[in-house]
Length: 331
Image 1 (cartoon, rainbow, N blue to C red):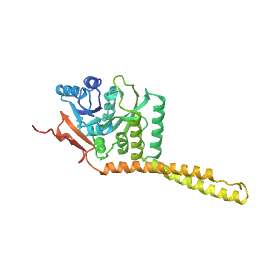
Image 2: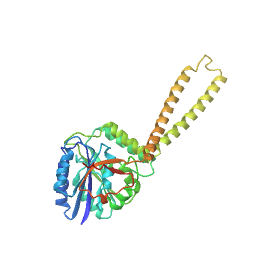
Image 3: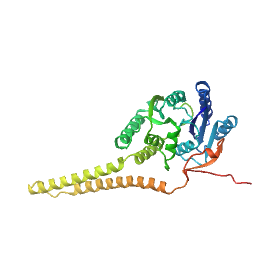
Image 4: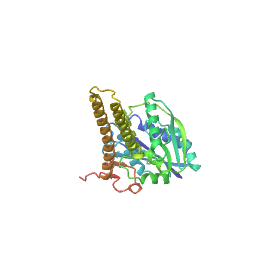
């Protein structure tokens, strides 16, 4: 039988992990009886009973695999590391345990994958969220697609079923801060997009606050587009042109004898603060690139694992330094 892998990141989700497991299992038993199921939970060092519940589930169901991180490395690093443990013929890159991305679409995704599509991506065409967040997301995709080298489908997240060869191409990226949906879009292959409604969370509290969303957006923009440096170039050229025009206008007015009274103080102050702000903006953008380069060249593991449950060590995929597993000290 072909194997389908589902990767579910979690952090302090004791109210949701068992429901997620039971829901996925019921879907496979009912709609995908001819496929082998592999469900990988990646825990980001939860402080509640999440790991305890996952251990109990894995003890009774060997198709459930658990990775426990030594600390919270963030959802993208953890999920990317979970993908390294996937052994399926096709892999659902991320199914959050809060089930805001509906697992009921998995059978449809599998059917389309069997028909020849290498990537079956879910698009959150309808979101049960506020107007401000929806508008911010639309602006983000316009920026990325306007200046990027490839198209990042709007409203498509990590809720995507990818073929084994696509996953291998994704895992070949040695990225310190992997933006998974961008990497999947960048590798290409035949893709189909399925719209769905992104549901509101029913239990627990979302771990994605505004600052985390901004951080992820900046990571995507700096990693996959030339937008920041292009912006710096355009602003620099614009300021230079305006400065030349202002100089010419000042000379013409002086020759015509217009505005003989002492002047210039306001112009100097405005120009000083404006140019200082522009310089700080550009330095900040360069700092983002330098920080990304620094993190990449430092090397070392992107994720440190504390524990693996039901995982064959040989099955782990990934380049050197991609993950480190802590070995318990012998008594």
